[in-house]
Image (cartoon, rainbow, N blue to C red; front, top):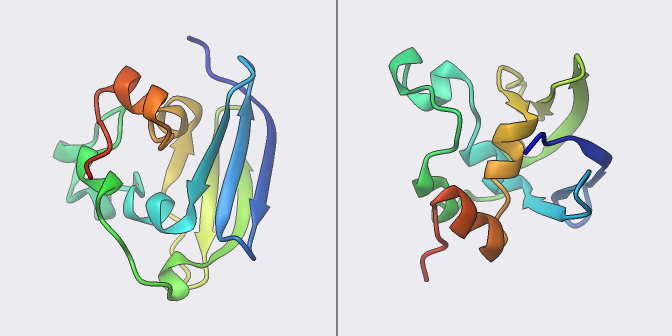
Length: 119
């Protein structure tokens, strides 16, 4: 699939980012999930842990509401990704379209990308 967003909305009140994709699917990401899944080398534990999909553990990790999980800004990075800027100043993660789609928390995409939601 050639993932491409057709719409992106950040709702700070609901604390979620919504992306509508070119296949009509809408992904809704809680801010704490996005921060837990930050794709930067520092958050991933080094370059040797860099993968095209998120670590499955991010789907069960819960982060408390804090400046590190409050989205300050969303910045387009070329035509292939977003950089999320957090209130604690962290802005190193580049979330490319494939990574974001693989991070979609819906059951359909969890099955498709091999990281089912655990109860």
